[in-house]
Length: 290
Ligand code: ARG
Image (tube, rainbow, N blue to C red; front, side, top):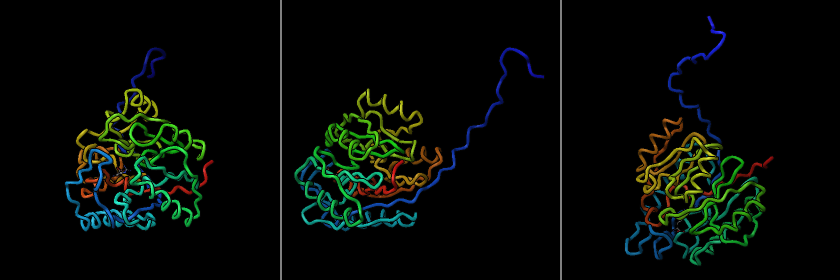
C-alpha cells in the first residue's frame, strides 16, 4: 500500500548504461606535412635542436586521413605551401559555422601567409571568408559545441576576435582565459565530444573560466594532467568516435565509459611542433543555422 503522507523511496537504479552515441558525417580540410619542420619556437613544445622525421610525420598524418575516411568522413586537401612548416596544422586556418567563415589572422609572422591559402580553398568550396580585423588562430582557439562557440584567449587569439566571430557568424561566443603556456590554444586543453559535451583539463583555465565551463557543461569529462600533456584533448569527435592520441589511455577509458568509441591515433612526430589530431583538422560546417 502507498503511504498517504511522508516520503516514498524510489527504487534503486542500477548504474545507468552509457547513452547510445550517434555519429554525424563530417567534412574536414587537412594539409599534408610536406614541408613540416621545427625552425622557430612559437610554443613551449618546439625545440629546433630536435630533428623532425618528415617521412614519419607524413605516414602518421596519412593514418589520420585514412581513419577519417574509414569512418565515412570527407577530407579535402589543402595544398602545402613551401616555407610554411606549420601548415599541417590546418585547424588554425579559419572558423566555419553555418556556411560562413571567419578567416584567420595569425599572431606569428611565420604563419601569416597560411591564411590566404585557406581562403582560396574555402572559396573554391563555395565558402566566402570574412577578412578578420583582430588576431585569431581559427579552430585552434574556437570550439563549436552545438549552438555555442567557446573561444580561448591568453596566448594567441585576441579577446576582441571573440566578439568579431560572434558578429560575423551570428553565434554566441563565450570567452575563456587560458593560463598555462603549455596549453597555448584552446584545442590543446578542451575537446568537443558532441553538441552538449566537452572534455577538458581545468587547470589550463583561469579560476573564473573554470566556473564558466562547469556552469555550461556540468557533465564535462576531466582529463588528467598526464593525458592533457599527451595531447589527449587535441581530439576530434564525430559524436560517437573520438580520435585522440594513443598515449591518452585514461581519457580513452573515461570516454568509453561515457559511451564514446575512442580511436587511438599516433601523431607524436607532430607533437614536436605542439600539435596533434585536432590541430591537423579543420571542420567545415556548411549547414545553415536556424
Ligand atoms: N607550431 C604550431 C604553432 O605554434 C602548432 C599549432 C597547433 N595547432 C593547434 N590548433 N593547436 O602555431
